[in-house]
Length: 318
Image (cartoon, rainbow, N blue to C red; front, top):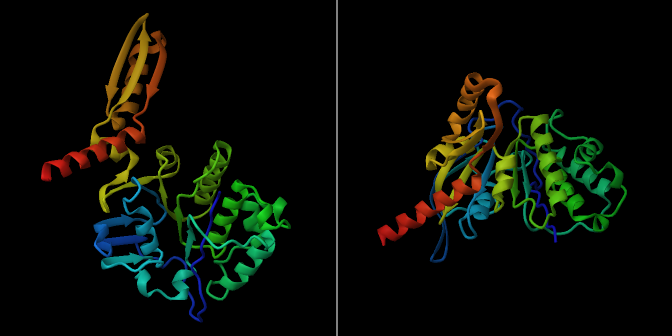
């Protein structure tokens, strides 16, 4: 069953800062710690997310991904540490800040009796109290962008799983936020619905400078959507950087195979050297180069290498 969005805005009379004044980075945390009794969910976590990045949090169950998102959204209080999102401490943020933050969570309180278009118009009017004139989405335009114009008059309970998740994203976007948090956004999707959702995220990123922070168990999804990845294990950041930097960090190599004058050749190259190597092959072999195939190092290989390193380090310390 697809679960959906929790919006973060509440009543206030304050207004957000003018667009273009968002400080850099979009998210900064230093020494972030969260405990539940004796359980340490997040332990001395440092992270940085810059405006316009699409960042994927990766990690096994219990790694601290969702708890981190909830703290960054202001939905949970941290135990200690420094956190700023759009330059503001989420624990003490006002409604002007909340109007700039979109949240799509794994669970929500259903609006199944609402009609799709009516709900978005209602939320748009609510957010208009906190948004500048340039900030708000027109609800009908937003429905078009997320591909729901044809079901605007339908009740939410009649939507398919993929349509419901698109509506979740529309609710998260209706205030035209500067940052969008997505917690396991495609859980329960079939392949078609997942591909449609990925296309939607790509379209949104192309439309405006929108920072997106998502959590996922799906390594292929992170590879498809993210410009940067953050690997969490046991509540700590084990890696933060681009996918390419991730590959360099764990020294996983791409595989190039080809035939030259009937002879098979296989090369292994670091990910950042693959393109220069291909150019050299084409220039030197010319028309005799055949059956060229490149197998890129996958995010799954990289992730497994990082988590194995973490496990070895833990055993060595015990």
